[in-house]
Length: 105
Image (tube, rainbow, N blue to C red):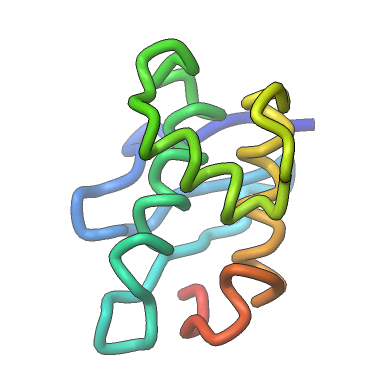
């Protein structure tokens, strides 16, 4: 069950956030650690959607398509929550769009 972000939320530079029921600390490393700008943006959009800081209708087309790409979903009618959870899962497993990305910290 998703419990959202911790009381501090995600920081601009990809700082610590708490994700999931067990409140595991994760952090997207910077470009020096192998993350691209789009990979970080996909994670930030996913966290914002699941944390309630962004609504799906407020996403512009490029953010929505990036979220679908990172989630590995080929259907534009996908549910935003499902796409966001798949993005975070793929990022934590280094799968798909995040295959060559650096480590979560």
